[in-house]
Structures are given as structure tokens and as C-alpha cells.
Image 1 (cartoon, rainbow, N blue to C red):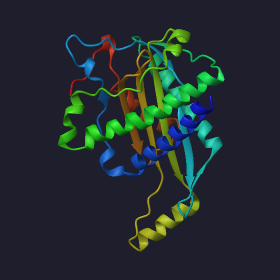
Image 2: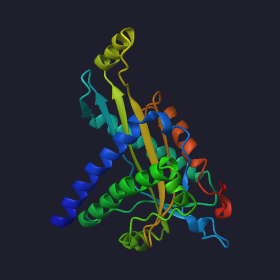
Image 3: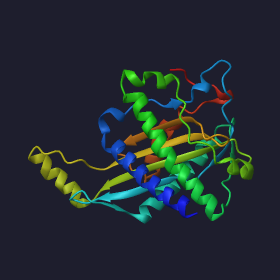
Image 4: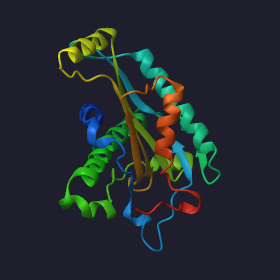
Length: 253
């Protein structure tokens, strides 16, 4: 258990680092494409799972001070996660092809394992998304042969819930403090660009049998706020528009 805890902490640090890079590299990420496991594009195509369990969103909201220091705000974090959980539940309930399963109560060791997989999803998934969209010609083959996986280990969740796949949500929201906003205005007067807040959310569907990332997409914005329900509705709407539809049909690239 000590080993599991240590790995979990390390993966969480790596996840935060990946998200930080993604969030503040605003330029090329807007409009980035989604990713699909290559077996969904074969003929015959791999069936897309329809019985899904929504794991608790793992989104953190941090305030950026005038000097650029990031401070996690627990109340804002709780509000953002509640907004995302509610919006996803509502949006997926409107898709009759999906059967949503309530996430079960987990034992401490099971919770730690799920936490590790959520952290792994962010490291593996977002890194994969980045290289397949912006890695240049040498990564072009991975765009059509997207085969990233988190590995086996979540089968216990399938047995507990009867679900075929899990929906994983990771993200961060960086909110500028009043001092930061003032610094941005002063900096602009003198031609100095000071970055403001940005929100980034990543959603993925992971096969519980083998850990394959079947689909993933993300959205980010420099003007929306994950504490705001309308912002969450807009960002998740953009993401879920690429989720495979009825009968497992997907939009071919």
C-alpha cells in the first residue's frame, strides 16, 4: 500500500505539470482534434461501450496571484467539480444509446488505484493528444493508429458496476486574482504581456477490461470559468459533440 500511495502522489505531480503546460500553451491548442482508438475505425469496427460509469471529476481550481503564485482554492474546486459532474450526468442522460451506472463506494485501496489511473490518464492521454496533433510528420501515423492505454487493473470496477468503460475527467482552472488583473492592465500599458487565467478540461472513455483509451477530447478557454455552470455547459458541449454516437458510429477524420 505504501508503494501504491507513493506512485499515486508522483503521478498527481506529473499530471499537474502536463496540465500546466497544456493550459498556458494557449495558441495551438484551440480547436485541437479529438482522439479515437484505431480499432474503432477498422472494418468491422470495435463496438463502442454503451454502459458507462462516471468517475468523480478530478478538477482543481487555483488562483493566480499578482506575482504568479498558484494557490488551490478548495471551495472553488468543489464547485467546479460539482458543476462538471452535474453537466455530464445531464448530457449523457440525454443520449439514449448510453446506460449510465452510479459510481460505487470504494474501499481505500480501490480508491487509491482509481486515483492512480486518473493521474495516468492525464499523463498518457494528454501527452498522446499533444504529439498526435502537434508532434509533426513523424507522429502522423499515431493519428490513425491511436493505441494508447492505461493498462490493466480496473477490472474490479467492471465487476462492481457491470459497466464496460469509465468516463474520466481531469482539469484545472487558473483564476486571476484582482491583483493579477491589475498587473495585466498595467503591463499592457507598457507593452508587457502578462498571462491571465485559463480553464482546461479533458474527458476520456477508458475500457475497464484493458485500460485502452477509446476516445478522448478536451476544451480550454481563456474567458470561461469552471465555477460557472454556463461555462461548463459550453465547454463540455464542445467536448461531447465528438463522442461516438448511436450504434458506435464515429466521425471519420
